Length: 100
Image 1 (cartoon, rainbow, N blue to C red):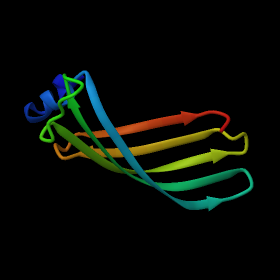
Image 2: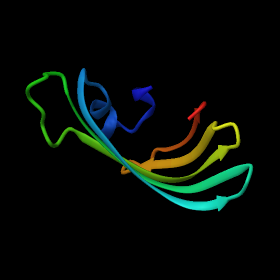
Image 3: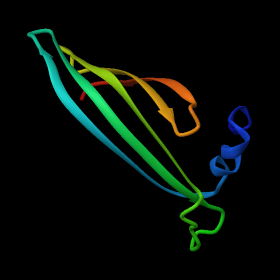
């Protein structure tokens, strides 16, 4: 919910069009028969606009974080990540991907 964020960022989270990128570095950590694990480092950034052809560079927000990704013998992957942004919002992300 955008209204739960600091006043400085509320308007940065409400738009109809956006350009988004996410950069993630994955470093192998555990490589066993039944489980593989990777350390994750990520950086996200987005810029938004309510007009599809007019983006203002000052209307952007970014975040970054760390996490761990586990891939199991059945090719299911589970990631848990801790993220924050320049407004010190903190989030825990749980991501599950089946049959990779």
